[in-house]
Length: 399
Image: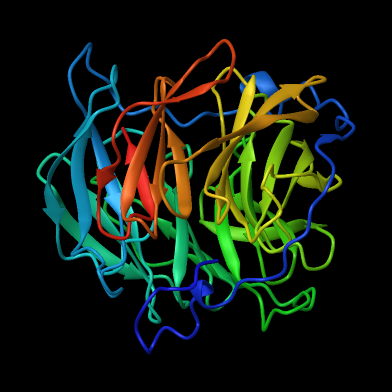
């Protein structure tokens, strides 16, 4: 959660309240789930979203999300490019016409960009990247959508409405445009956690098995597992996984192997390793552990995991660091290696470049994007140069 997003009509926003801070142990292990059956749910058969096409060399696109209604915010989606060797960012303007595009995602074929419109009357917008033409906006049926993702099959857009605690599904046609919503589910149980006024869906993603989609809800301290009907775009709840009360889960990132994931708990400043069963869609949440923060106010935001599954990185807002973890014991354990300064204020979101050589951090309060070289052998992070200025930078999407 953040505290400064402006607009008097945005009292529902997750940026209005932050919770208590605690600490936990530095190493955590959880048991592996039962081996998946030798059918479509096997790890080796799990679908993967294809990376956007990459050229042999030269600059790559970078898109930056912001808040258009915040004081000092942007006027739309920031347009930039980066050098995949040095990490240097060069700005190239702004794509206007998308209000409060605070989170971005790209279609698996790399041709269409999607943005949330994080407002009381929430929406999701599609942008054709070839000519940056707006393909239209569809309502999410909820308030304050803060996250979206594309199912690996490329036919469904998943979005999370923070303000109303609901998740939505939209169809994607052959052009990349969005159709009318096919489902909307509001989280009604369990009851809100300590200090929460209701459900607050913070993330909606597809598990590596492709048949299940998971919604992380900060308000109910729950990760919901749904089966997605890929013909109809409808959701059926199959499981719930509960954190300890007041943890405030925010963001879940899967290991490439598909049977473990790493959860950032925003409110109590912890991280957890989770075991995942592809056959049932059930998540098992482990014990809380340290984010590496120095003991002050801190709200962990998001994990990023290297493609080889060897290391994980966590953005710490408030501590303003990136925690580095080694992934060990058949990926069931995170070992904290230390932290590095992020080089900005309040790293809201992080992302690895498609080739894994760079890590980008969108720093909301300093209005900057910082870039780090990633040592694939050691998991070390080295600053790739001066921060890139971008108004209220809350999402950096390198393609």
